Image 1: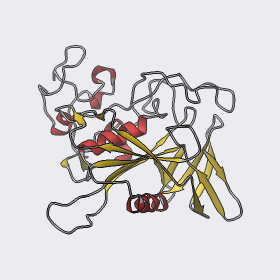
Image 2: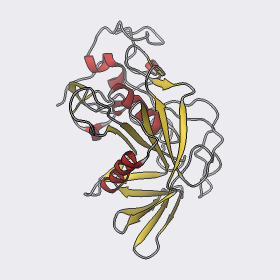
Image 3: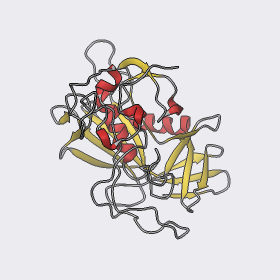
Length: 293
């Protein structure tokens, strides 16, 4: 990522996950027949049906709509106005000729965070659906998601906290899971809240990533920018960090839970409430959701 501030504008150079060049990546995940989800609405994935396409390699961010901040480890991050960035995504949704409603339009950036008009921080991904172009009835609706690829050393915290996994693919895994379970952001559930994510308040949607936001696990081999932080400290561990995801029985207040895979060790409620099961040690995620206070 490169951020420049000439005069009254900022030039935002975005990240292309396909070839590591300075560009933005939009991908298409095929929906029909290729999306495979666990029966209890957990992880969803597409196999060998991802298409990468180039889009404009920079955007001019107007004055007052962006800010560059540095983490204690010396890592720079771009903080962009939410409404302005959302408008750019909607414009791309309308203008990219190769998009079609049978594919998820997935936009990726690197080290970009969004702020609200009141200075609230931060949004690091979102998903949604465009309005139909063809009236009522059986009609195509384009779904989309945006997430940032976060380098280690920016927001991650030491082991044991809820932000340990604040790096690399955690946010794209969050958004893809939520899109698969609530593509139009209309799947209602009994309102819930959780101490692991108090920033969301009282939520009445089937958002599978929000209760476990930035709680994840390490897997695979990540060789991209795994060296020391700019200040010489070391945050990178050589792994990718997918996010944990909440299962449907958590939202349903199902106890005992005979739907999900059993927890790794015997438990009163039998089944897992999140993908990680016992490995997610936060008490509010080892039992069903509770209502809002």
